[in-house]
Every structure is written in structure tokens, then in C-alpha cells.
Length: 73
Image 1 (tube, rainbow, N blue to C red):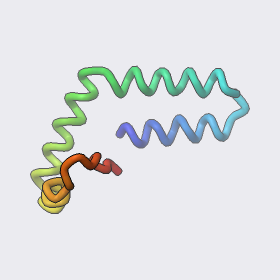
Image 2: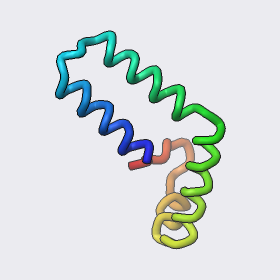
Image 3: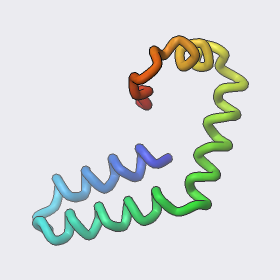
Image 4: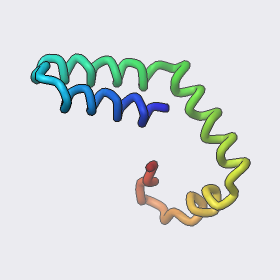
């Protein structure tokens, strides 16, 4: 969901002539929403449910070398 909203925001910015100030407003709003505890909680629940249904994703994260950041598509 977050990626969709980010994509929509980027598309709006690229497709409009709103300029830098509008872009920065969108980025601030995105960050505010993405950092909200309710959104973080929902994202965690979604990741857990996906992990239950897609065992391959669990294996992939389990094999991640220590010290390496996990890639989140």
C-alpha cells in the first residue's frame, strides 16, 4: 500500500508542473503517514501474514548474511 501511495505521489509530481515546493509537501506528508505508529503496526501485521503464507520469503530473510541490510522490494 505504501509503495502504491509513493508511486501515486511520484506520478503526480512528475506529471504536474507544481514544482519543488509541492514535491517537498508530498514527501513530508508521505513520511508523516509512513512513520505513524498505526501504519507501522499495520505494515508489521501484513508482513507477518504474508510470511505465514509465503514460506519462501521466510527462507530468503533467514539466509541474509549478518550485517547486510535486508532488501525490501
